[in-house]
Image 1 (cartoon, rainbow, N blue to C red):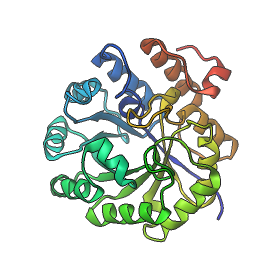
Image 2 (cartoon, one colour; image 1 turned 90 degrees about the horizontal axis):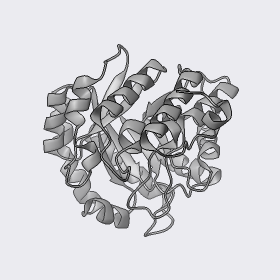
Image 3 (cartoon, helix red, strand yellow; image 1 turned 60 degrees about the vertical axis):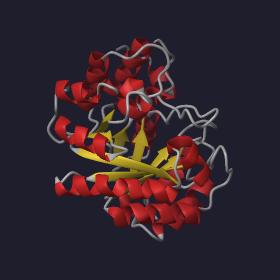
Image 4 (spheres, rainbow, N blue to C red; image 1 turned 135 degrees about the vertical axis):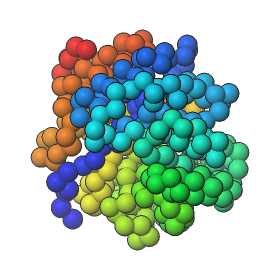
Length: 301
């Protein structure tokens, strides 16, 4: 299959990238400026908040304040993670454009992550999805550990396909397939996608690949070759997974955009502005920039 002409980037840095940041709580105004800078750089879909219990994810406790303070840009979708009905209700009051629910393809990972089975996790999301749809709010579904689990090892592509199908049947418009611990390789990614695409139309699928073993770009290219055209990324490679030992950050948005530019695939993103944003946020956090492209460009915030 030919490569797509356009790829939609879903920027997850403000949520997935920051939620497990160690140390002191990141100031609301820093999160707001990050989101504004990302929208100014051309990102059209930004995961801006997570409405989870602040007891479990204290970095995301200010989701309502963040969504109230950002400069909403026309044509940009500002989404939030909503793991339960209370989170969904709070997200609605905050004025989100879209919400996301999450499960996994591994029973062991689901138990460790949210203390329930896959079946129970899906059942929990039914009222969330029903409320969202009644309010005309699109729902995106995440499936974690699609290319490997830190507790169960290899994951059957058919299991990934089954969970993805359930989320679609529940009412999710799109499924993001997550290599949570970044162990996938291009052939494994292709075989997984082939199995899922037999159950869910490929235009309703997205890739969410971590870069633990340095394979994320290769894996993204592999699934682009199969016709997938939506990719989750995080500026400066921010993020990780607290339940997956050794899991480094998401693939850097800058690195993916550079690759897409080289393939003549449009994304609508200004790479220089994006790189400056990545340098800016890593300075705010006091950490190194995880984007090789941003480091090579040497942009100043």
